[in-house]
Length: 114
Ligand code: 5GP
Image 1 (tube, helix red, strand yellow):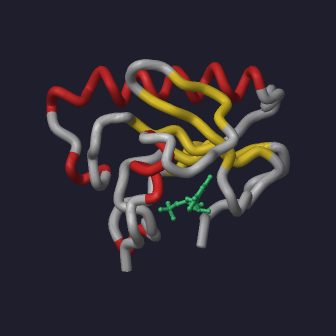
Image 2: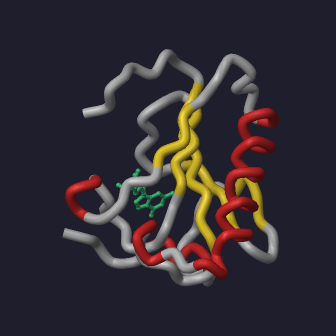
């Protein structure tokens, strides 16, 4: 079941988050339940529920989120590699209904994921 949209509340500064990046298009902050030594979430300010809801006009926004991931991986010392994950809808493991990219690193990440 997709939970309440806590990320909208983080965008609106109604609840706190440990921000590592903020610009006119997106925010990035540490995940509250980290699955790796580095676990950051990158989210658009625009309300997009899932990856499946992306539209052609969102192409530059998605590209921007990837470039922020590259910058943050560098800033956070993930020189040996990292993983980007987007869980989509319930079977994809998505629990918060606002598009988000996980940036995970700082340990060996196994494949395939569960
Ligand atoms: P999903 O399972 O939807 O792909 O990822 C949602 C992520 O959001 C989870 O890793 C979860 O730990 C994180 N999360 C849920 N609520 C909060 C919150 O209030 N603050 C932060 N920083 N992360 C949250």
